View (cartoon, rainbow, N blue to C red):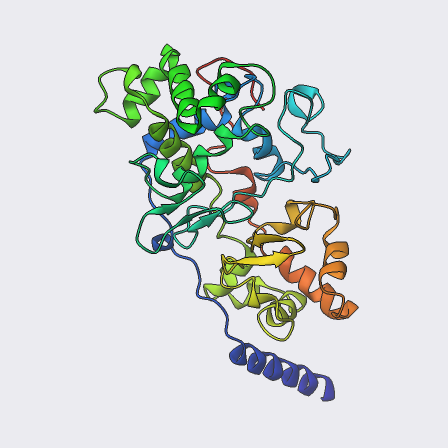
Length: 358
């Protein structure tokens, strides 16, 4: 008789703790931006096409790959996990013709309306007046649909990303400024006739492929990124939608600690575990990352110096004891959405340029 009473008391205490802890509202369709499917399909091709790089050997997918949960599994110092079998075309993941070996952030849920600040340092953002904040300032072209489209412009002008360090029309155009690089990229697409069918579907008002601009390209890539890695069907999401059985006891304890006494949600707030603000980390300001699918996006830390999540948690929150750390790890595992790891459309079978896929 004693054991059932103890079990019942445990349930009562747990229910009381849940009612005392303010949990976020569940995510719904209206929390996400909507995009034209034809624009998304064009963006998918552009995202994977190396034609947008100086060396013709890099694409957006080099660093944000479906095989690596929309990231690249690389530390800031260039170390690559030897367990990663998804090396590009069977070769080393990074080489002189590839971008700098930087730890790329995952792209989950960037189509959510709450994402108005992007890049690890938040340097691209929606302004309070409705425009955009970026390093281009007043030179930012008109016609960009949202902050994702704005963000898509800038890897294209970085020497350690798509422009590269080898001699090319893009590296030569770099001396004339961002607009010259953007024009050169649009010209490459315009000179690739195989792009006309998807461009015509996405932009039926255009009379020819020669009318495509870098703004069109950025809007398409932004649309793809905004829809491809939507992640809101994890066990945690099911719990927020009312399925009390979706989380086990350890995950529930971890959730209560995360949104309660452990203080994690002071920065990792809401259903997507981010306040979208910039915080001082060492000598840098870094935007709080979302923790969705964090169990699959190693390495961890601002520089990607921790390959295992428990090690990072010990470093980041040394005051937490082992029992609570285990509960927090269990909760973080409940943020995995297996469907989202694969992406909505996935990797294309080929691209209009016929260049190799990452």
